Image 1 (cartoon, rainbow, N blue to C red):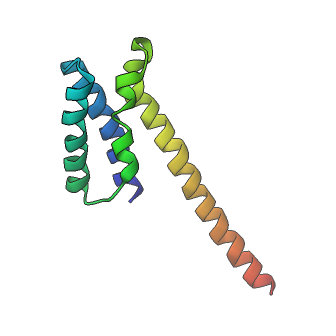
Image 2: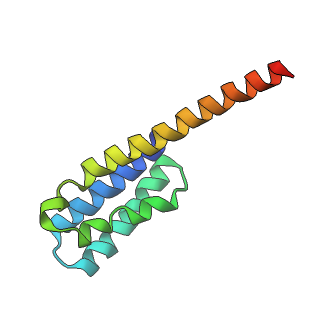
Length: 102
Protein backbone atom coordinates (compact mmCIF):
# COMPACT_ATOMS: atom_id res chain seq x y z
CA UNK A 1 0.00 0.00 0.00
CA UNK A 2 2.83 2.39 0.80
CA UNK A 3 4.31 1.71 -2.63
CA UNK A 4 1.07 2.78 -4.29
CA UNK A 5 1.01 5.97 -2.21
CA UNK A 6 4.62 6.66 -3.15
CA UNK A 7 3.86 6.19 -6.85
CA UNK A 8 0.74 8.34 -6.61
CA UNK A 9 2.40 11.28 -4.85
CA UNK A 10 5.59 11.31 -6.91
CA UNK A 11 3.59 10.71 -10.08
CA UNK A 12 1.25 13.60 -9.28
CA UNK A 13 4.19 15.96 -8.74
CA UNK A 14 5.80 14.78 -11.97
CA UNK A 15 2.53 15.26 -13.86
CA UNK A 16 2.32 18.82 -12.54
CA UNK A 17 5.84 19.63 -13.67
CA UNK A 18 5.45 17.99 -17.08
CA UNK A 19 2.13 19.67 -17.84
CA UNK A 20 3.41 23.07 -16.73
CA UNK A 21 6.47 22.67 -18.96
CA UNK A 22 4.18 22.07 -21.94
CA UNK A 23 1.50 24.69 -21.15
CA UNK A 24 2.50 28.03 -19.67
CA UNK A 25 -1.02 29.00 -18.64
CA UNK A 26 -1.85 28.22 -15.01
CA UNK A 27 -5.50 27.56 -15.80
CA UNK A 28 -4.81 25.18 -18.67
CA UNK A 29 -2.13 23.40 -16.65
CA UNK A 30 -4.56 22.86 -13.80
CA UNK A 31 -7.38 21.74 -16.08
CA UNK A 32 -5.09 19.14 -17.65
CA UNK A 33 -3.09 18.03 -14.59
CA UNK A 34 -5.94 17.30 -12.18
CA UNK A 35 -7.80 14.84 -14.45
CA UNK A 36 -4.47 13.13 -15.16
CA UNK A 37 -3.93 12.71 -11.42
CA UNK A 38 -7.46 11.30 -11.16
CA UNK A 39 -6.64 8.77 -13.89
CA UNK A 40 -3.39 7.86 -12.10
CA UNK A 41 -5.30 7.22 -8.86
CA UNK A 42 -7.88 5.13 -10.71
CA UNK A 43 -5.11 3.04 -12.30
CA UNK A 44 -3.58 2.47 -8.87
CA UNK A 45 -7.04 1.78 -7.38
CA UNK A 46 -6.50 4.02 -4.38
CA UNK A 47 -8.27 7.02 -2.91
CA UNK A 48 -5.64 9.59 -1.93
CA UNK A 49 -6.95 13.18 -1.82
CA UNK A 50 -3.47 14.56 -1.04
CA UNK A 51 -2.33 13.58 -4.53
CA UNK A 52 -4.51 16.32 -6.02
CA UNK A 53 -2.43 18.95 -4.21
CA UNK A 54 0.92 17.79 -5.57
CA UNK A 55 0.66 19.15 -9.16
CA UNK A 56 -0.27 22.63 -7.97
CA UNK A 57 3.06 23.71 -6.41
CA UNK A 58 4.57 23.43 -9.88
CA UNK A 59 2.51 26.49 -10.81
CA UNK A 60 3.73 28.75 -8.01
CA UNK A 61 7.29 27.65 -7.27
CA UNK A 62 10.15 29.88 -8.39
CA UNK A 63 11.83 28.69 -11.56
CA UNK A 64 15.01 27.60 -9.79
CA UNK A 65 13.00 25.27 -7.50
CA UNK A 66 10.51 24.18 -10.16
CA UNK A 67 12.55 21.30 -11.58
CA UNK A 68 13.27 19.93 -8.10
CA UNK A 69 9.59 19.31 -7.25
CA UNK A 70 9.57 15.59 -8.18
CA UNK A 71 12.82 15.02 -6.27
CA UNK A 72 11.45 16.88 -3.27
CA UNK A 73 8.27 14.79 -3.47
CA UNK A 74 10.38 11.62 -3.44
CA UNK A 75 12.33 12.76 -0.38
CA UNK A 76 9.22 13.90 1.51
CA UNK A 77 7.30 10.74 0.69
CA UNK A 78 10.14 8.47 1.77
CA UNK A 79 10.56 10.42 5.01
CA UNK A 80 6.90 10.55 6.01
CA UNK A 81 5.92 7.03 4.91
CA UNK A 82 9.14 5.66 6.42
CA UNK A 83 8.40 7.39 9.70
CA UNK A 84 4.91 5.89 9.78
CA UNK A 85 6.27 2.40 9.10
CA UNK A 86 8.84 2.78 11.88
CA UNK A 87 6.22 4.11 14.31
CA UNK A 88 3.89 1.20 13.55
CA UNK A 89 6.69 -1.33 14.03
CA UNK A 90 7.76 0.33 17.28
CA UNK A 91 4.16 0.52 18.46
CA UNK A 92 3.55 -3.17 17.76
CA UNK A 93 6.74 -4.23 19.54
CA UNK A 94 5.91 -1.93 22.46
CA UNK A 95 2.39 -3.39 22.71
CA UNK A 96 3.78 -6.94 22.68
CA UNK A 97 6.33 -6.19 25.39
CA UNK A 98 3.77 -4.46 27.61
CA UNK A 99 1.38 -7.43 27.25
CA UNK A 100 4.16 -9.85 28.23
CA UNK A 101 4.86 -7.83 31.39
CA UNK A 102 1.22 -8.09 32.52
